[in-house]
Length: 463
Image (cartoon, rainbow, N blue to C red; front, top):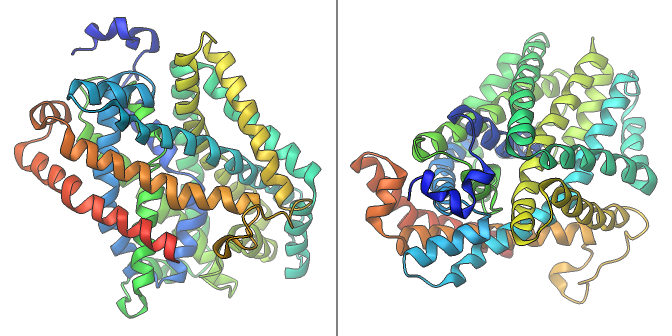
């Protein structure tokens, strides 16, 4: 079915990305988020640096690229919202429409994740004002930690920043493909890369840049544990926004003249490049201030602000860094809202703008539960009757179920469906790869990727 044939099923109304670059920027913007700038540096620090990076890159090739290609294929073939696209592809291949459960899980996961992702995006936004005001300058660790503690303890502050961040996300998605998503990524992604390069440039002046290069790129396999390998496997899956129906949604706007394989590889390379650049920006600062490279999640909101406060030009660099963090979070949050809005718009008579507002407000409301679980509801643990969930707040539970169950399950079902239940001939024609490259991708998708995802799934549940 050609693009022109699809006018009747909604593609003409929904439009297409204006170019391959537009899709790459959007997909990369989705993939580049807090996971790259926040999580990747600290898990690299915890797991020995260069050896972890090598394993991570291998995992991207084994898990990330095959599933991304499968999700984009479904979106482009279906030309509808992720759930409808999955159903249509299944029916065309004479398979049960129940396969759409994969997309349903993904859309629901995107909605839930955005609700608390927006809260964390709000933290980053609030830290721009702290950094720009010089609140970290010359302060002790106790004072810097208190700033973060006071933020988490204040429902009012958290609600204000959560509301601002969510409003920015709704504003973009409400404008639709050309005026909203495409315009936003055409501005935000180049700005993000420019800010990141500025941050790396500043990091070269700390006197510890080459130490950071060695840490990131010199393999130390003695420091790499089995847990480290499994963490690399898991992060390779999550960093590319897989299992959230995002690539299905973005793929539904992709023209048929664009190679899915080449595009997926490009997005993966750019996403990984941002993660490595973030490490080159962060670790010189960490080493210059005698801080711990494996400082954990507190690295961004507690350890680094302390370093900014002691550095020459720390106010400028700290402000720059948190602007970068907000841009990364914003592009990812836009992509999380898109598949849900796409589904809601097609299932109702509500306009694009109205759909974005309704879904966005619903997501904002769910986010309030995460906010309260950080303070007033900190002792509310809904599943405490189960030993595994003892002490887990609402925020913790939303994070746990999406990351450990919903995303791997959606990704696994998608890989199995496309690998085994879509006609090989039509799949090869649509994917548009050489025979050898297509054969490699299909064998990975059939035999390697599902096993790797199951390993991640089991490891996360058992750990």
